[in-house]
Length: 159
Image (tube, rainbow, N blue to C red; front, top):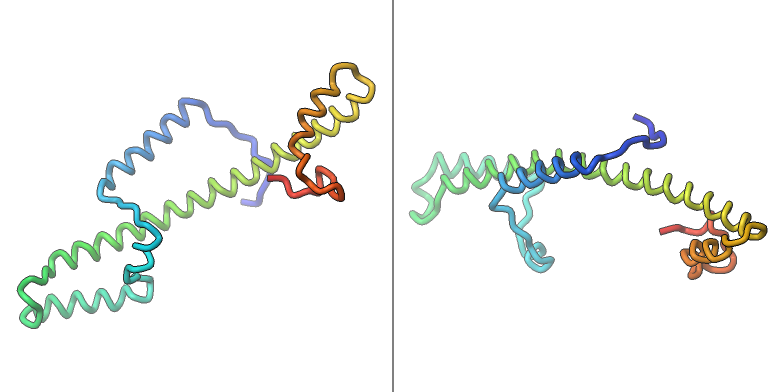
């Protein structure tokens, strides 16, 4: 769907229900962990190209258990592989939603900033002739104090 101005809202109840749904997901995944950057770097990675290798190694382990040490747990290998496949499937879905939320937030934020810049321009203009608006114009203008003098508020990178 091509981007158009966003015209939506979320009620407090909607947000509460969404957070509850996210908590349900978290509760269904009690084994999730958080790795440090150092831990992440040290781990052997399994990407899409490695799936066939892992699948073939499982077949080899199941077909030839006698070549493996007695301490090697083939069932655990299979469980871990199945979990990796399931988590990858979930991650794809979650990433798609995260991208949509991020894109929508970016678009809505842009709309809000563009409209706010329009309000600021009108306040600045009106402050020249309308008593009591000068301090409001100055307050709104605080946002742009750090921006170089060669840029206007609308052409400056707004963050």
